[in-house]
Image (cartoon, rainbow, N blue to C red; front, side):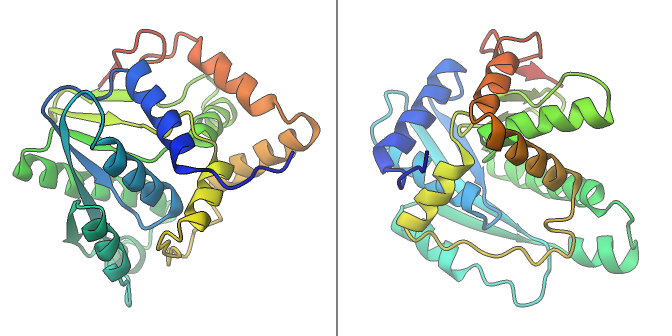
Length: 249
């Protein structure tokens, strides 16, 4: 069945359900939204900016982009969107791309890049007194991460809707976990979000892309397979999925 463009109220419904089911937001939270420039993070920005105005629990948001140092990276359209949505926007400039690809010439660049980005974000959160960070992982990401864990680690695991990083004093929330990637694609087109194409040379050539393609092929024969696997995860003993309290690390 072909999906029509996702309406804003449907997006709000998916996100509010996740916020409520997993107690993602508490009174007085200051939440940073990690903005990569992709469709997922911009959709999350749009959703939380709107929900902030009517959600029964009051919270503040800001947005952060880690500028990896790619030449000609232009975040002006994202800056304009944040201004339109009344969201404070920060760009943290780094030389991560240069370090990972030019100096270190990493054979597995994603791991080091992710580690360095997390370090930059954690420093920002601590400096600004932000206690939570919202990432734009959606339902497809949940299932694909589980497939990666099965194939490469030999166990049934994926990330939690809420993750408490005890040593860093930061909580990660993932409000898009009930949202399908196909809906995000249609939403980003309908609302003309300023999606940036990733300049990363390994974009589209990762293990995650491999899992994405496997799930896509599975759904051709069984369109319900993604929802069934997601249900298996939600009902499993993976930390943070059953009790709504989140996983601790």
